[in-house]
Image 1 (cartoon, each protein chain N blue to C red):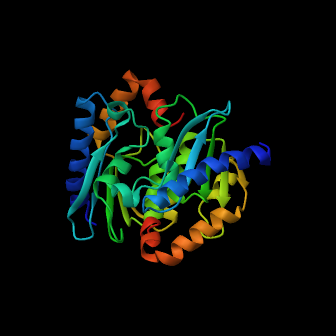
Image 2 (cartoon, each protein chain N blue to C red):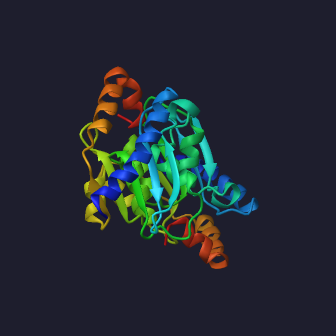
Image 3 (cartoon, rainbow over the protein chains, first blue to last red):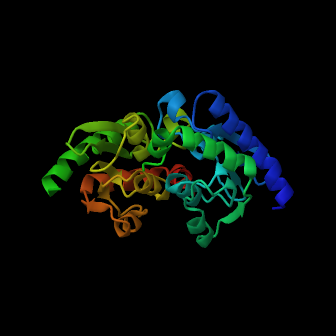
Length: 149
Length: 149
């Protein structure tokens, strides 16, 4: 995957994160792209909005994509390094690539995924870092709840 | 945790699995119990019923429990060894114990969880084995879809 492609796709996840923030939620967004580059699903963290701890950005995008026969060749794009829950999702379903906006404010399981054959593209995007840093600074308890800390 | 306690709790997960089967779904059930022994949430796989690939039994029980400040001391009870997705959930949120009905028809990430400090109780329950064996025999494609195989 070219970096330009990854950055274009990241924009979709960032849009989702901004939508979540505007709703009063945790600003993490994600999107699942097919092997052919088609957008299969997109979503954002819904802990606050739906009182739902199971809807992280990645699981929301996975859910929105509906039932798929295979995830071979698909790419999960997320504004933040995937936590163990979302890393486990990627590994179990054989999602091939993960594009990550940033891993400075939180470092999840992406090295583990790389060891298990998932191609990781870490973009270190300044807007993603800024959005999370600002959010965590203002809402530490909510953030800790979201990652079980 | 005593084995008798684990078996009593497993009965809740088995009830969920039977409900899922009666609905035409994949017969895997789960329940989340609090440190004080209170039932926090219960659920079953909903891939078929809701066209929702994100609702495995464990994630459904976790969701039903709603937002919790901590998962310390909680027990996830499931009829089947948790896949990587559900194992990641347990690890990320710090669920302390996992009671497993059986790991003969599918072996997920429970050894990995044990290495990371989660207490595992594997019951090898004949009814759980029989329910999955029968289901997989009759619906191999659906089962493979559910585990991304």
